[in-house]
Length: 470
Image 1: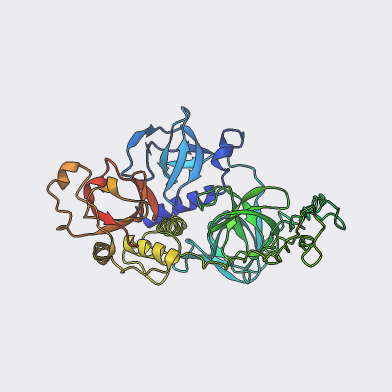
Image 2: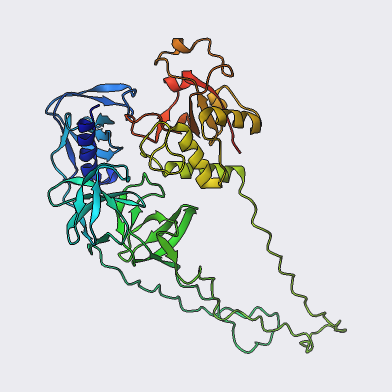
């Protein structure tokens, strides 16, 4: 694909990233429509190796479900069939963008406007102090996707030195959570005579709040694939309602909207230590009368020894995460890079681009601090040496295992007959997700880091062996 056509496709895809979430498409009359400009394949996967569903013909109109990456759109046709189509402007164009309120931002100091979310992206021009742009997405913590007044789409640094989000959503003042009035509970003493006054029941601690430190996506799910609700801006206060895993908080904004936000301390800070439930007041069990025993009908009041408080168990050291927790951490770390561009021989020192082994290595490094070898062959040797056995049958792999593949010869199983799993050269690697899916990256055209199905595809025929790196 020519650089010009690739750029056109990327720009179209970027324009579409502000589209309404899939869940809203059916109900909203403003669902984004995509018009087919030239006959194009509708495929089962966002790749030219995805099975062909049918051809979409010139003049057909389909509904946008989501922008997968710079090369592919997920769409739904008139019959309700979902599939993937090239985002190249040669084949498609949008006809009915949603009329949602757009998030604008002001440029604070001259900054480079680029074609990609990376300092290696080509420079479009300089944005000058005072210019206003529309923010269409935030691919990562370092870059905003924006559109300038001329309608040009590109990327700009998220640094507060260069850009400030404008007030579409005012910084909310948190509404204090009402404290339920204490319900008196009977004093827990067996004494028939009422002790001084009933011990007040513990009052619930105020809800845990947090402050947003830097503009961050507010999503419908605890994943970067969750639909974007809006941007939370620096200074907003949210109520933390849960933490599904180490990477995401479930929060509620001042308008009462619930969603998920990154737990990274670059974006959010919990207020006032995790309000350790303040018991109002700490219920002092009216000291069990020791020296002054309450008269009892017992003939011989055996002096009740002062009830020695049950020794507070010494806190057990936090157990090291189980293997399954480690696996989930690795997968969560890998999923954060979905859509990151592919580059053969990528720089192991940054996360702007990945090749297959660099991606696998980064996921383990981010999640566990485990630094695997830098290339697929050495990773294969590491797994063979450290795993409790490897398997040549992908059906026997466990979630989080690393998969190793030989070179591509074609899409027919017959082309791989006679392969020797431990005799072939390992040329590709990925992380097994379970359910016949692999998380991997393998080419520029496929859109970078992505999830693929294995069964019945060349991935199944090329698979050599796999096992755990833990």
